[in-house]
Image 1 (cartoon, rainbow, N blue to C red):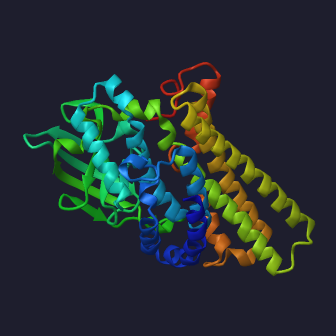
Image 2: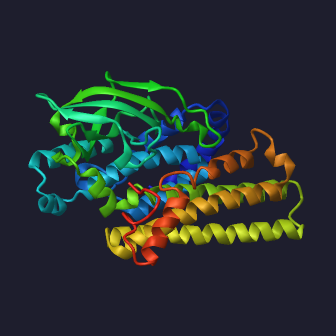
Image 3: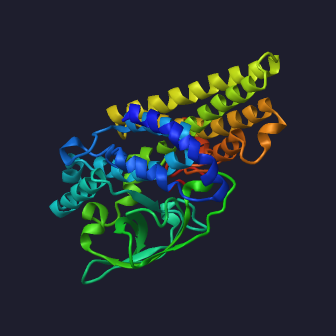
Length: 384
Protein backbone atom coordinates (compact mmCIF):
# COMPACT_ATOMS: atom_id res chain seq x y z
CA UNK A 1 0.00 0.00 0.00
CA UNK A 2 2.98 2.32 0.53
CA UNK A 3 4.01 1.89 -3.09
CA UNK A 4 0.42 2.52 -4.17
CA UNK A 5 0.33 5.71 -2.08
CA UNK A 6 3.48 6.92 -3.83
CA UNK A 7 1.90 6.12 -7.19
CA UNK A 8 -1.28 8.02 -6.40
CA UNK A 9 0.36 11.10 -4.82
CA UNK A 10 1.32 12.81 -8.12
CA UNK A 11 -2.20 12.23 -9.42
CA UNK A 12 -3.62 13.86 -6.30
CA UNK A 13 -1.19 16.75 -6.63
CA UNK A 14 -2.32 17.41 -10.20
CA UNK A 15 -5.93 17.80 -9.02
CA UNK A 16 -5.21 19.71 -5.83
CA UNK A 17 -5.13 23.23 -7.26
CA UNK A 18 -8.65 22.98 -8.73
CA UNK A 19 -10.31 21.52 -5.64
CA UNK A 20 -8.56 24.08 -3.43
CA UNK A 21 -9.58 26.97 -5.68
CA UNK A 22 -13.21 25.92 -5.87
CA UNK A 23 -13.46 24.53 -2.34
CA UNK A 24 -14.81 21.27 -3.74
CA UNK A 25 -14.38 17.80 -2.36
CA UNK A 26 -11.71 15.62 -4.11
CA UNK A 27 -14.20 13.03 -5.33
CA UNK A 28 -11.76 11.55 -7.87
CA UNK A 29 -9.08 11.09 -5.22
CA UNK A 30 -11.49 9.12 -3.06
CA UNK A 31 -12.55 7.01 -6.00
CA UNK A 32 -8.88 6.12 -6.44
CA UNK A 33 -8.52 5.34 -2.74
CA UNK A 34 -11.55 3.04 -2.88
CA UNK A 35 -10.36 1.26 -6.03
CA UNK A 36 -6.91 0.70 -4.52
CA UNK A 37 -8.32 -0.73 -1.28
CA UNK A 38 -7.12 2.00 1.07
CA UNK A 39 -10.32 2.01 3.13
CA UNK A 40 -9.36 -1.42 4.41
CA UNK A 41 -5.76 -0.45 5.18
CA UNK A 42 -5.95 -1.03 8.96
CA UNK A 43 -8.59 -3.76 8.83
CA UNK A 44 -7.23 -7.20 9.85
CA UNK A 45 -6.49 -9.53 6.98
CA UNK A 46 -8.90 -12.06 8.51
CA UNK A 47 -11.70 -9.57 7.77
CA UNK A 48 -10.51 -8.80 4.24
CA UNK A 49 -8.27 -5.81 4.94
CA UNK A 50 -4.62 -4.89 4.68
CA UNK A 51 -3.75 -5.60 8.31
CA UNK A 52 -1.64 -2.45 8.65
CA UNK A 53 -0.58 -1.17 12.04
CA UNK A 54 -0.25 2.45 13.10
CA UNK A 55 3.29 2.75 11.74
CA UNK A 56 2.27 1.63 8.26
CA UNK A 57 -0.73 3.96 8.36
CA UNK A 58 1.60 6.86 9.26
CA UNK A 59 3.90 6.06 6.32
CA UNK A 60 0.95 5.89 3.92
CA UNK A 61 -0.61 9.11 5.21
CA UNK A 62 2.72 10.92 4.82
CA UNK A 63 2.96 9.89 1.16
CA UNK A 64 -0.66 10.75 0.38
CA UNK A 65 -0.20 14.18 1.97
CA UNK A 66 2.75 14.89 -0.29
CA UNK A 67 0.19 14.73 -3.08
CA UNK A 68 -2.76 16.52 -1.47
CA UNK A 69 -2.94 17.30 2.22
CA UNK A 70 -6.71 17.72 2.13
CA UNK A 71 -7.23 14.24 0.72
CA UNK A 72 -4.83 12.72 3.24
CA UNK A 73 -6.54 14.58 6.09
CA UNK A 74 -9.99 13.20 5.24
CA UNK A 75 -8.50 9.72 4.78
CA UNK A 76 -7.00 10.14 8.25
CA UNK A 77 -10.50 10.52 9.68
CA UNK A 78 -11.58 7.23 8.12
CA UNK A 79 -8.43 5.46 9.30
CA UNK A 80 -8.97 6.78 12.83
CA UNK A 81 -12.37 5.06 12.89
CA UNK A 82 -11.18 1.72 11.57
CA UNK A 83 -8.00 1.94 13.65
CA UNK A 84 -9.97 2.60 16.83
CA UNK A 85 -12.30 -0.30 16.05
CA UNK A 86 -9.34 -2.62 15.58
CA UNK A 87 -7.88 -1.29 18.83
CA UNK A 88 -10.81 -2.80 20.73
CA UNK A 89 -9.17 -6.20 20.81
CA UNK A 90 -10.86 -9.36 22.03
CA UNK A 91 -8.70 -9.22 25.16
CA UNK A 92 -9.70 -5.62 25.88
CA UNK A 93 -13.32 -6.52 25.22
CA UNK A 94 -13.13 -9.32 27.75
CA UNK A 95 -11.53 -7.02 30.33
CA UNK A 96 -14.19 -4.37 29.81
CA UNK A 97 -17.01 -6.90 29.71
CA UNK A 98 -18.18 -5.90 26.24
CA UNK A 99 -21.05 -7.99 24.88
CA UNK A 100 -20.53 -10.47 22.06
CA UNK A 101 -22.99 -8.53 19.88
CA UNK A 102 -20.71 -5.49 20.07
CA UNK A 103 -17.75 -7.48 18.79
CA UNK A 104 -19.85 -8.88 15.94
CA UNK A 105 -20.91 -5.32 15.02
CA UNK A 106 -17.26 -4.22 15.17
CA UNK A 107 -16.29 -6.92 12.69
CA UNK A 108 -19.15 -6.02 10.35
CA UNK A 109 -18.06 -2.36 10.31
CA UNK A 110 -14.50 -3.43 9.52
CA UNK A 111 -15.58 -5.84 6.77
CA UNK A 112 -17.60 -3.04 5.19
CA UNK A 113 -14.55 -0.77 5.21
CA UNK A 114 -12.44 -3.47 3.57
CA UNK A 115 -15.16 -3.77 0.89
CA UNK A 116 -14.99 -0.03 0.14
CA UNK A 117 -17.11 1.83 2.69
CA UNK A 118 -15.55 4.91 4.18
CA UNK A 119 -16.27 6.67 7.43
CA UNK A 120 -16.23 10.29 8.52
CA UNK A 121 -15.90 11.67 12.05
CA UNK A 122 -18.57 13.95 13.55
CA UNK A 123 -17.11 14.95 16.88
CA UNK A 124 -16.37 18.69 17.02
CA UNK A 125 -19.01 21.25 17.93
CA UNK A 126 -19.21 25.02 17.96
CA UNK A 127 -18.02 26.30 21.31
CA UNK A 128 -16.64 22.90 22.36
CA UNK A 129 -14.15 22.03 19.65
CA UNK A 130 -13.16 18.38 19.83
CA UNK A 131 -13.44 18.15 23.63
CA UNK A 132 -15.74 15.21 24.24
CA UNK A 133 -16.51 16.38 27.77
CA UNK A 134 -17.98 19.64 26.44
CA UNK A 135 -20.24 18.45 23.61
CA UNK A 136 -23.97 19.17 23.61
CA UNK A 137 -25.18 16.51 21.15
CA UNK A 138 -27.26 14.06 23.17
CA UNK A 139 -28.73 10.59 22.92
CA UNK A 140 -31.41 8.68 24.77
CA UNK A 141 -32.42 5.04 24.79
CA UNK A 142 -35.55 4.02 22.90
CA UNK A 143 -37.34 0.74 22.35
CA UNK A 144 -35.56 0.41 19.00
CA UNK A 145 -32.09 1.61 20.01
CA UNK A 146 -30.92 5.20 20.52
CA UNK A 147 -32.21 8.61 19.49
CA UNK A 148 -29.38 11.06 18.73
CA UNK A 149 -29.91 14.81 18.31
CA UNK A 150 -27.50 17.69 17.88
CA UNK A 151 -25.17 19.44 15.47
CA UNK A 152 -21.52 18.95 14.58
CA UNK A 153 -18.99 21.16 12.84
CA UNK A 154 -15.71 20.49 11.00
CA UNK A 155 -17.07 17.15 9.74
CA UNK A 156 -14.58 16.39 6.97
CA UNK A 157 -16.16 14.62 4.01
CA UNK A 158 -19.68 15.61 5.08
CA UNK A 159 -22.18 14.54 2.45
CA UNK A 160 -19.80 12.04 0.85
CA UNK A 161 -19.10 9.44 3.56
CA UNK A 162 -20.96 6.15 3.86
CA UNK A 163 -21.28 6.51 7.65
CA UNK A 164 -20.35 8.91 10.42
CA UNK A 165 -18.77 8.33 13.82
CA UNK A 166 -20.90 10.55 16.05
CA UNK A 167 -20.04 11.42 19.65
CA UNK A 168 -22.93 12.21 22.00
CA UNK A 169 -23.68 12.38 25.72
CA UNK A 170 -26.51 10.60 27.52
CA UNK A 171 -29.51 12.79 28.31
CA UNK A 172 -29.99 11.14 31.70
CA UNK A 173 -26.29 11.06 32.61
CA UNK A 174 -24.20 13.84 31.01
CA UNK A 175 -20.96 12.23 32.23
CA UNK A 176 -21.61 9.33 29.86
CA UNK A 177 -20.13 10.09 26.44
CA UNK A 178 -20.61 7.42 23.78
CA UNK A 179 -19.89 7.03 20.10
CA UNK A 180 -22.16 5.70 17.38
CA UNK A 181 -21.46 4.69 13.79
CA UNK A 182 -24.44 6.10 11.89
CA UNK A 183 -25.08 5.32 8.20
CA UNK A 184 -25.60 8.23 5.81
CA UNK A 185 -29.26 8.87 5.04
CA UNK A 186 -32.43 10.34 6.57
CA UNK A 187 -31.83 12.09 9.87
CA UNK A 188 -28.44 13.48 8.84
CA UNK A 189 -28.41 16.86 7.10
CA UNK A 190 -25.32 18.63 5.77
CA UNK A 191 -25.10 22.41 6.00
CA UNK A 192 -22.36 23.69 3.68
CA UNK A 193 -20.40 26.01 5.95
CA UNK A 194 -16.80 25.18 5.07
CA UNK A 195 -15.01 28.12 3.37
CA UNK A 196 -11.60 28.19 4.97
CA UNK A 197 -8.11 29.60 4.67
CA UNK A 198 -6.49 26.19 4.28
CA UNK A 199 -7.51 22.58 3.69
CA UNK A 200 -10.31 24.00 1.55
CA UNK A 201 -11.03 20.70 -0.20
CA UNK A 202 -11.85 18.68 2.91
CA UNK A 203 -15.58 19.48 2.76
CA UNK A 204 -15.61 19.97 6.54
CA UNK A 205 -19.20 21.18 6.71
CA UNK A 206 -21.68 21.16 9.59
CA UNK A 207 -23.74 18.04 10.17
CA UNK A 208 -27.20 18.27 11.77
CA UNK A 209 -28.38 15.09 13.49
CA UNK A 210 -31.85 13.88 14.40
CA UNK A 211 -31.84 10.14 13.94
CA UNK A 212 -32.71 6.82 15.60
CA UNK A 213 -30.14 4.03 15.30
CA UNK A 214 -30.25 0.34 16.31
CA UNK A 215 -28.33 -0.95 19.34
CA UNK A 216 -25.51 -2.24 17.12
CA UNK A 217 -24.60 1.36 16.20
CA UNK A 218 -23.25 1.95 19.73
CA UNK A 219 -19.52 1.30 19.49
CA UNK A 220 -18.41 -1.23 22.07
CA UNK A 221 -21.98 -2.01 23.03
CA UNK A 222 -21.46 -0.22 26.37
CA UNK A 223 -22.26 3.41 27.03
CA UNK A 224 -19.64 5.83 28.30
CA UNK A 225 -16.54 4.34 26.65
CA UNK A 226 -15.53 7.36 24.55
CA UNK A 227 -13.60 9.36 27.17
CA UNK A 228 -11.90 6.29 28.61
CA UNK A 229 -10.68 5.06 25.22
CA UNK A 230 -9.45 8.57 24.31
CA UNK A 231 -7.25 8.66 27.40
CA UNK A 232 -6.02 5.07 27.17
CA UNK A 233 -5.15 5.20 23.47
CA UNK A 234 -4.92 8.82 22.28
CA UNK A 235 -2.92 8.11 19.13
CA UNK A 236 -5.87 8.09 16.71
CA UNK A 237 -7.18 11.37 18.14
CA UNK A 238 -3.78 13.05 18.41
CA UNK A 239 -0.89 11.63 16.41
CA UNK A 240 -2.76 10.42 13.32
CA UNK A 241 -2.88 14.05 12.10
CA UNK A 242 0.86 14.37 12.58
CA UNK A 243 1.86 12.19 9.63
CA UNK A 244 -0.36 14.24 7.33
CA UNK A 245 1.21 17.57 8.26
CA UNK A 246 4.76 16.27 8.02
CA UNK A 247 3.85 15.15 4.48
CA UNK A 248 2.53 18.65 3.72
CA UNK A 249 5.78 20.14 5.06
CA UNK A 250 7.84 17.84 2.84
CA UNK A 251 5.72 18.81 -0.16
CA UNK A 252 6.46 22.49 0.61
CA UNK A 253 10.21 21.81 0.56
CA UNK A 254 9.92 19.89 -2.70
CA UNK A 255 7.81 22.67 -4.26
CA UNK A 256 10.29 25.32 -3.16
CA UNK A 257 13.21 23.40 -4.64
CA UNK A 258 11.38 23.07 -7.96
CA UNK A 259 10.36 26.76 -7.95
CA UNK A 260 13.87 28.01 -7.14
CA UNK A 261 15.56 25.68 -9.62
CA UNK A 262 13.24 26.76 -12.41
CA UNK A 263 14.07 30.42 -11.74
CA UNK A 264 17.81 29.92 -11.40
CA UNK A 265 17.94 31.08 -7.78
CA UNK A 266 19.63 28.08 -6.17
CA UNK A 267 23.01 29.85 -6.00
CA UNK A 268 21.79 32.36 -3.39
CA UNK A 269 23.18 31.59 0.10
CA UNK A 270 19.95 32.70 1.82
CA UNK A 271 17.98 30.27 -0.33
CA UNK A 272 20.35 27.38 0.34
CA UNK A 273 20.30 27.88 4.10
CA UNK A 274 16.49 28.04 4.17
CA UNK A 275 16.24 24.82 2.20
CA UNK A 276 18.81 23.14 4.44
CA UNK A 277 17.09 24.14 7.67
CA UNK A 278 13.69 23.15 6.30
CA UNK A 279 14.96 19.75 5.18
CA UNK A 280 16.44 19.04 8.61
CA UNK A 281 13.30 20.23 10.44
CA UNK A 282 10.98 18.08 8.32
CA UNK A 283 13.11 14.98 8.75
CA UNK A 284 13.33 15.53 12.52
CA UNK A 285 9.55 15.84 12.78
CA UNK A 286 9.12 12.80 10.54
CA UNK A 287 11.42 10.77 12.79
CA UNK A 288 9.35 11.80 15.81
CA UNK A 289 6.15 10.70 14.06
CA UNK A 290 7.67 7.37 13.07
CA UNK A 291 9.01 6.79 16.60
CA UNK A 292 5.58 7.49 18.06
CA UNK A 293 3.97 5.17 15.52
CA UNK A 294 6.46 2.40 16.25
CA UNK A 295 5.79 2.65 19.96
CA UNK A 296 2.02 2.63 19.39
CA UNK A 297 2.32 -0.68 17.56
CA UNK A 298 4.68 -2.21 20.12
CA UNK A 299 3.38 -0.81 23.42
CA UNK A 300 -0.01 0.89 22.98
CA UNK A 301 -1.13 2.79 26.06
CA UNK A 302 2.36 2.76 27.63
CA UNK A 303 3.35 5.98 29.42
CA UNK A 304 6.34 6.61 27.16
CA UNK A 305 4.24 5.83 24.08
CA UNK A 306 1.78 8.53 25.12
CA UNK A 307 4.62 11.03 25.52
CA UNK A 308 5.78 10.34 22.00
CA UNK A 309 2.24 10.63 20.64
CA UNK A 310 1.89 14.16 22.04
CA UNK A 311 5.45 15.10 21.01
CA UNK A 312 4.78 13.96 17.45
CA UNK A 313 1.65 16.07 17.06
CA UNK A 314 3.31 19.16 18.57
CA UNK A 315 6.37 18.87 16.34
CA UNK A 316 4.39 18.11 13.19
CA UNK A 317 2.00 21.05 13.58
CA UNK A 318 4.69 23.55 14.47
CA UNK A 319 7.14 22.33 11.84
CA UNK A 320 4.61 22.35 9.01
CA UNK A 321 3.65 25.98 9.64
CA UNK A 322 7.22 27.20 10.08
CA UNK A 323 8.66 25.30 7.12
CA UNK A 324 5.89 26.30 4.71
CA UNK A 325 6.31 29.96 5.71
CA UNK A 326 10.06 29.80 5.22
CA UNK A 327 9.71 28.13 1.82
CA UNK A 328 7.29 30.84 0.70
CA UNK A 329 9.79 33.50 1.74
CA UNK A 330 12.62 31.68 -0.01
CA UNK A 331 10.61 31.50 -3.24
CA UNK A 332 9.67 35.18 -3.16
CA UNK A 333 6.62 37.23 -4.00
CA UNK A 334 5.76 35.28 -7.15
CA UNK A 335 4.94 32.23 -5.00
CA UNK A 336 2.21 34.19 -3.21
CA UNK A 337 -0.03 34.31 -6.28
CA UNK A 338 -3.29 32.37 -6.05
CA UNK A 339 -2.86 29.03 -7.73
CA UNK A 340 0.83 28.72 -6.94
CA UNK A 341 1.56 25.41 -5.26
CA UNK A 342 3.54 27.03 -2.45
CA UNK A 343 0.74 29.46 -1.70
CA UNK A 344 -1.69 26.54 -1.26
CA UNK A 345 0.77 24.50 0.80
CA UNK A 346 1.40 27.49 3.06
CA UNK A 347 -2.32 27.76 3.79
CA UNK A 348 -2.77 24.01 4.24
CA UNK A 349 0.24 23.73 6.56
CA UNK A 350 -1.04 26.54 8.76
CA UNK A 351 -3.94 24.32 9.87
CA UNK A 352 -1.61 21.75 11.43
CA UNK A 353 -1.18 23.44 14.78
CA UNK A 354 -4.93 24.10 15.01
CA UNK A 355 -6.10 20.52 14.43
CA UNK A 356 -6.79 18.62 17.63
CA UNK A 357 -4.90 18.35 19.74
CA UNK A 358 -3.72 21.92 19.09
CA UNK A 359 -0.06 22.75 19.60
CA UNK A 360 -0.90 24.64 22.80
CA UNK A 361 -2.78 21.64 24.20
CA UNK A 362 0.07 19.30 23.25
CA UNK A 363 2.69 21.55 24.86
CA UNK A 364 0.60 21.93 28.01
CA UNK A 365 0.09 18.16 28.24
CA UNK A 366 3.82 17.53 27.92
CA UNK A 367 4.67 20.28 30.38
CA UNK A 368 2.27 19.03 33.06
CA UNK A 369 3.53 15.47 32.59
CA UNK A 370 7.20 16.55 32.79
CA UNK A 371 6.49 18.41 36.03
CA UNK A 372 4.99 15.31 37.62
CA UNK A 373 1.29 16.11 37.28
CA UNK A 374 -1.57 14.22 35.66
CA UNK A 375 -1.49 15.52 32.08
CA UNK A 376 -5.00 14.29 31.27
CA UNK A 377 -6.60 16.08 34.21
CA UNK A 378 -4.09 18.53 35.64
CA UNK A 379 -3.68 21.00 32.81
CA UNK A 380 -5.29 24.39 32.45
CA UNK A 381 -6.27 23.64 28.84
CA UNK A 382 -9.04 20.98 28.61
CA UNK A 383 -7.95 17.75 26.88
CA UNK A 384 -11.07 15.72 26.25
